[in-house]
Image (cartoon, rainbow, N blue to C red; front, side):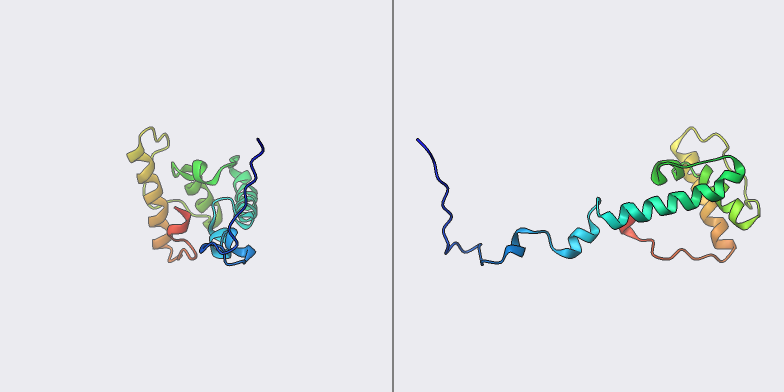
Length: 124
């Protein structure tokens, strides 16, 4: 027996617009796999690596490679040509040590009067 699926043309959820089946444009732009995000991520990664190569460091994954604060600190030191104001953990084994390193980097930005723009909850 062959089954044929016939949708009701008067179904309350079908208004005849093909766009209803697609994700709204704003949701597509915010989606984790949005093409512009990947392009921006790759561009920023290449830019970081261009600056980090003078200290023999590279990054492949922004979130993972900046998570312990070490490469972020290195990038800031290269860009500013200054050292961090506070000591940081050179071998952060624990989450607390990693968070402290990121805090050192953020404190450095604050002391240098560098404001972070276009960074919000969407990146978290």
